Image (cartoon, rainbow, N blue to C red):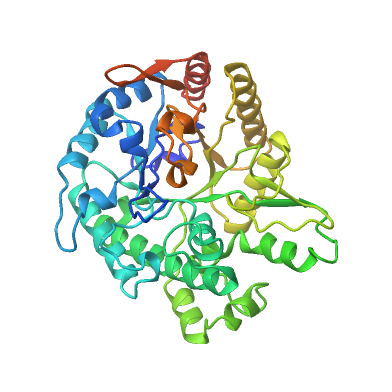
Length: 418
C-alpha cells in the first residue's frame, strides 16, 4: 500500500545501532564521554554506514551529537551531520535518529535541571527536523529516559548529580517535559510524515523483593521503570502507584494536568533488553543502592525476560514494539547463541500475535564502557566486545573487523526482508 508506514507493512525489520552516549561535562576525576570520538565514528562515518549496509541492516539507530551541533548557545554547526545524513540517503539506509542520548551541551548550566532545558531541547529538535525533513522522519526524542533520570537524578553519577527520591522526581519530570516538547516540535515540522520511536530500558526486579527491608523499594522500582513514559503519554493521574512519590516532592496538580493535556504517544515502543543486565536481584539482608557505584547483582533470565518485557510494553502502551537494543558482551560463540535465540523468541511472539516490528543488534561495532568517564586508563581498558564488528587498535587508526556475528545477523536480516 502506498504511504504505509514501514512499521505497518507486516515484516520484521532488522537494524543495528551505533553507540552515541555524549556526556561532555568534565570535572576533577571525571572526563568527558563522547562515544563517536572514542570509536572514531566522526572520522570513519562513511565506512561505518557501509558496514551497516554490508550486514543487510534496513535501519540504523544513530544520534545527532547535540553538543557538537550546538557548541555555544545560539551557535549552530550542522556540517558533520549534514554529510552523515546525506550518506544515509545515498545508501538507502533508514536513520532512526536519537535526539538525546545521555547528555546536554556543556553550556547548559545544570543540564536537565536548568529552568529552560525543555525550550532548549525543543528548539534543537525543531531545527534538526526542519534541516533534515527530506532525509530523516524517524525520531527517538530521548533514549532510555528512565536511565537518564536514575544516573542524573537518583544516583548522582552524571550531571547535574542529584541524589535520592527528590533528585529522581526533579530530573524525571524535567526530562519528561523536554521529551514532550521535543516530540511536539518535530511533529509541528514534519506533520504526519514523522514516526516517533520511544525507547526505554528494560528494568526487571527479582529475588527477595518481599523481604521487609526491600518490599517498599522493590515495589517503587517496579513501577518507576515506566515513570517517564507514563508521564509523557498522560498516564499519571489518580490511582497511579507513583502519585504519592511525585506529590511528596513537589509535583502538583497543574504539572500533572500539563502532561495529561500535552500527552504524546509512541508510534513504535522500543524496548532495550540485555539478558545479563536487565534483571536486578534484591537479596535479603543486603542493601545495594543500584547503579554503577553500588550495583545490585543481576540474573540472566534469557529470552524469557525479553519476551516478558516486550509483552509488557506492548500491553501497557498499545503500540507496536521493537527490540531496540540487545546483545551480550562476550566471545563470538556466546553472541551467536544469543542472536539466534533472541531472533527466534521475537519470531515466536509475532506468531502469537504480538506486534513486534523490529529487531536491533546493539551495537554495529564494539563500544567503550561508561566507566571510562571515571578512569584515567586508556580507552582500550574499557572496550566492550559486543558488536557485529570488532574494534581493533592499529598504529594509525581504530580498525573495524567483521566477525561471524555479522554474517549470522545478515542471514537473519535477509530472511526477514522476504
